[in-house]
Length: 84
Length: 512
Image 1: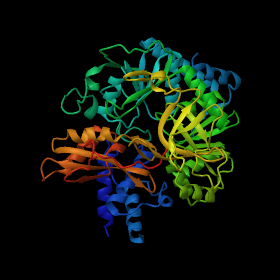
Image 2: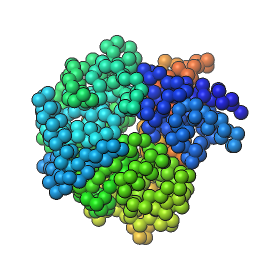
Image 3: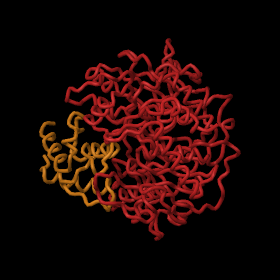
Image 4: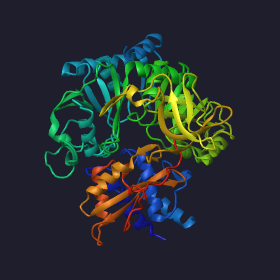
């Protein structure tokens, strides 16, 4: 079981390193969709979650609320890892 | 003949009809043609001339469409550069396609804006000076010059579009053809190619494709795919028929549903990944206006087709699109029994299964209108590539008694990650350049939700290998989606007994 805070830190590092340009100052509150998060970015985040936490996020959990920002995404991942 | 004529005719017939709708913007056919004329005049004044090859590195937008048609109005050749390309990949396209200019969103050397409501902070070649346009040398020089060394200067076309001039050592040779479009497909030097399409060719394939799609002025198409990868038998076709294209801000299920219902979309054109998101949406919102939902770019998983039908009562229609051919077939009568089929080929196409095995499976070969005109680098004419008039697709498939085509695998090792093509040789070439890597093997691992994912095995020169530096090296040199999800250190790679070549795993089924 991974702590929500650790998930948030890891997701933030992944997004900063692999999705967003270095110029983007990403925080846990940055609105991902407004910042240009597209469907190929989503594919790569889902793969990261699968590799790192061992489960595929159900498509039904992927919505505007989940992807609002890294904090919301980390909370969803933390909740789902308990369920799986 | 020029493709702008198709749009001009549509604008003459339906001047006040919306060509594009976005959340708070509607552009009519008359307005679209006007914007194209303005952009064309500006590009002409800046020096764009007939036959000139111009790269288009621009995000999905109405402007993308305006710029493409404006270049066509000037008889320039459009070469799309996907915005996710790395600096090195951009440099390769510029060099291999002999681009003399690139249209992009920011002037060379400008910094990306901070995140705002405007979409721009994604890794964006030609707009990332720290990585892309700084004059420093160093790594990234694979073949020829870096893109940065070619830049002569940038000039504004509009506040949001810049034309960057590039020095070329040799003038491109268009071989006397009326070229509209060249699609660069990456790979190694031996497998990379530019698929050359003339104006007449695109017109022919648009006409052939519409016998399958039956798009007309009463249709509205909900659009979510990247225009840099999908444009001809899609956007050009819709605009030639007076249809409306509804653009969406993002491809999450709720946005998709809102776009469809606000625009009363009749046609969906998306990948299985998008349909999976929609199928699992829990809002209960329906899409009563949709008459046709086309699934393209990769094989449609059966559970996605089933769940989508259960959720919306709309059967997904798989299509077979190939850049060399256009839209060859579409499953116009999808039923639970044949959801796996890409349907019956269009009436203008002939399809045959070459040297079928005892299951009836063999390589799919196609003949018909709108076949590509040439490969650009090195130049090979269509007649040199075709065999007795047939194009061999590299797909292994079978045809049932009713003429429905099923694709079962690929002859080549190309990996299909949620619809994006990844060539193992291209990634291996990057891995092998890392100073600590002796050799590598890249393959697609079957994935229940994405078709395949990219993985790699590497043999290191020293046991205390730093895999993170190999990963970072891949990120620096490849578009992000090509970076292997898993990197594994192995002692040796499997080789074939006869030739000693690295053995490749059999690819799984996919199309598009």
